[in-house]
Amino acid sequence: MKSFDTTKADSALIVRIADRANREFAGEPPAVLLRAVTLPTVHLNGTGRTTLQSTYADAAHDLNKFIRSWSNTEFNARDYVVAGAWDKAVAQREAMNDKIREIRDYLNTIREHLDSTP
Image 1 (cartoon, rainbow, N blue to C red):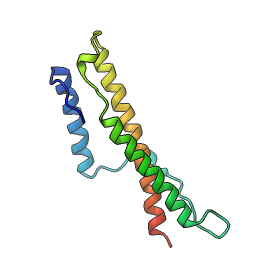
Image 2 (image 1 turned 120 degrees about the vertical axis):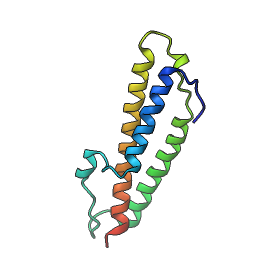
Image 3 (image 1 turned 30 degrees about the horizontal axis):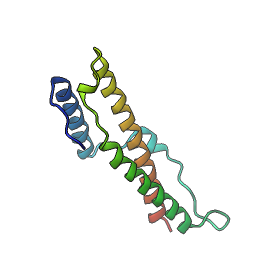
């Protein structure tokens, strides 16, 4: 991630990011949605396991590429000069990051399922 100015608003963002990272590394369960993922069943009349594994792996690879690009986008308080705009931008960015993590976790859940079932 590119560096950004460390203003008070940036400090608040850093604290929120660090807090989220600490919770994730503490082993908190994934998002509620992931508890209800409907997993594909590999069977003779369906898509083959190799095809499913390959296409989900491709999607995960592309998502990881997007995440690298997303993390390199400039995101600085100095670009949000209207009063209150930075706090709104931070909240929106966090919401987008949550959605990206949700997609990543969804893909990984299915990939793990496909790799672990006979």
